[in-house]
Image 1 (spheres, one colour):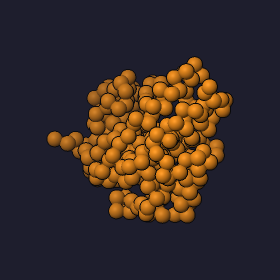
Image 2: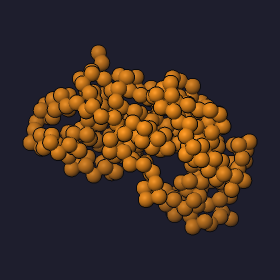
Image 3: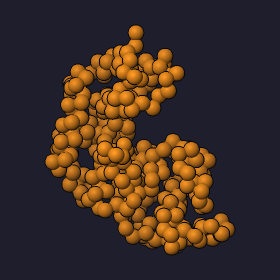
Image 4: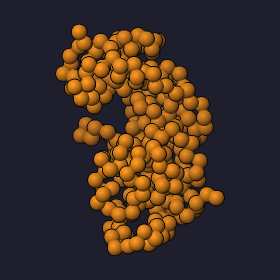
Length: 276
């Protein structure tokens, strides 16, 4: 039986917006757009001073490790399964941890977590309701059906996933914002092959095409999913910028996967060096 007690507002999750997306599919931009439209609490948009979007839960379920990335996991009590990988958490664990995260942001009730038994903390989580809007980013690739009435938007590539993958390469690695250690550059070709082997042809409920969203190749609207119109001038400009960035590197909307792989195999992001 579904646990309807662990909710944001006491009856359901209708004030939670979930953005579940593949890397390179514009999830951060969607997060920023919706956060602005619904006044999502605690979110911080990506900007010149902020290199990535922050959701209402401090990106709790975007990271690969709660313990290594989130200092408050060890600082505050009440989180569950924090030692395990976030992608292994059950829906009920996620629900619990999301509410714990919000409780610790509320000084009027966070103190109750300090000197309490596990049963008392669980009761506090169940009985504390949040009625404002919140947004959650994730790469979980889930249908989120147990989050009753949550507004779920899934962004995964239906076709041409090599184009969204190329965009991520350019923005994350080739641009100099590298997450790869210098010692790993002898493995660059393998890294490229592995990244481009990741693909998803999602057509499930509430899923929009990542390629269409990122590049604006068709009129993508999520109005029927979350009641929000995405057709703004700022979004159109962002989509055109993404097309232009690919073009700067000789990649077009008609480039093949093989052509993209060949390009990145001969391009190294570390200090702008090239293989050779």
